Image 1 (cartoon, rainbow, N blue to C red):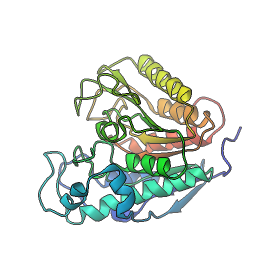
Image 2: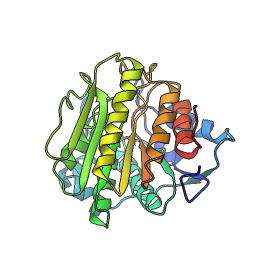
Image 3: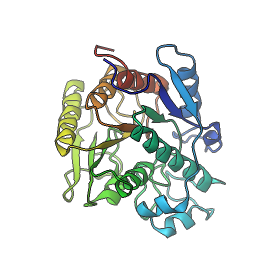
Image 4: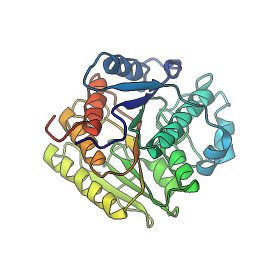
Length: 299
């Protein structure tokens, strides 16, 4: 059964987002280039490719202070994990622009995936951190809430807690945040729920795969009870069993199942790339998109 108005997936990407890097840093350009190559060389999915818009200040300032925008132009590292790069403000704004474009397409009933860097879910209202400069998913969620969506759910399956998204959305009316992540692990948050709308599902390191998947399913059932009219997905693929930055246990078939499970909610949704640092990232993204688009069945 087809779940979408379109028979193709829109991929928002721009080769310019590979224009910055630091030797030895895991958030590197090949995450995008290899994934683009894999998707362009497959025939199972029909894809539509588009470039991102560049975001202006107004939607960003719903989620962040003016100081964080100004800080992007100061040539000093943000922390040990988050270097300053020439032009990082432009790269970050393009990633935000892709998130806002994805929101628009989701509202039109079109499946969409933002294949951009930098990621965003660790950036708090006031601070860039954890490879993230601006919080793409939170900016898009608040844009949605400000422009007609009554109940916006953010579902974050990155292995690292989306502390920045939680910080920004905490007790914000009409939004809810659901995060399944390893704990303890960076950024050392997400042990328990916060406020009225931030729900955390910590998973211990090396949790058996079946239990990890059951926790994801529990979070999805809770999200369904929230009755959102829009779902924004922080799609991180670092809970994969071979990812070097955590101790997750998921396999490609589990990301396929996640895509299916989200699509079967029959609620407009869009997905943004967050983490995922193994060489298998392109296959994991492909599996997820096949789940989003495909009929029922095992991967």
